Length: 344
Image (cartoon, rainbow, N blue to C red; front, side, top):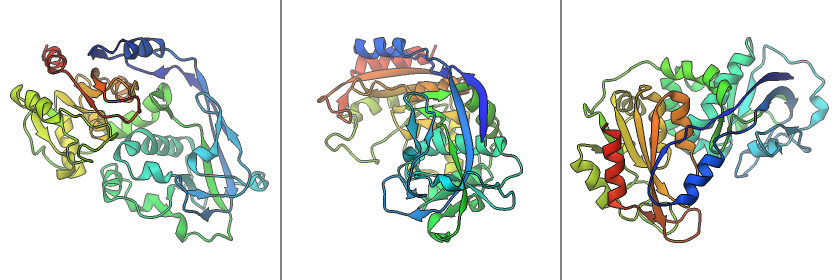
């Protein structure tokens, strides 16, 4: 077991907020500080069986608790149950050690940015001399393989649990998650992930020369009930277009092109979601405008910006109902104020 004693306050950059949702403002201020928490990482051996679960697969029958930020949770968070009878065995440096990817994380671009890659680089740094691999169940999206390519990790960093012998014992990693929704373990992410991000090579030139970018979600799910969609999307995108912003659909660009677009951007705007998380590739002086429902009082994007040196602002809209995924609308005047502020 590695008991990594370095604790940290958790990064949460307080953004500027445009809109009238006072609850969000108060909540952000109340959550701006958090007590330090210890981080733990352990390597263990276990048998693994593929399942059809939402999170992934099972490593067999009793869970071992791990420290989370708060509250304490266990490895079922990662789709694992652990047979602790193998914990006394010696780690073999000739065999791979697996960090698991939950199925839900695997399918969403933003989770690669906020969860999978930070934990992978930390594991590689804290376990030198071991071959660290990402273990998944079922197909990995092509965009994920492209992200690994950009970080020069290639497909040899991935193994499918279906290809492992279920009768053998395999070496696994359990780790305190580096993110608790809004919050990141500040020092650990800075120490182990900022350098790999800045080291991603510029493989292509940006297909856009515009430093003002609006990331559209109109092709994600359209505007369906309770899909977190911006109901007055056409109106708001037109406001940004008239303000000089290039409206982009990220899925039309390769991962390398998306990184290049963000690297040359001065201001990036858009509805809250994975499309904005490429802000980690922006220059430190970059600005991000995040548009989201006042019902979704989370600050994931603000925390990412805080970690990577960008400033952030939120335009908060009025939700249709009390469902967390409720669709919403934002006021044109709030958007115009945010655009004017970002131009200063």
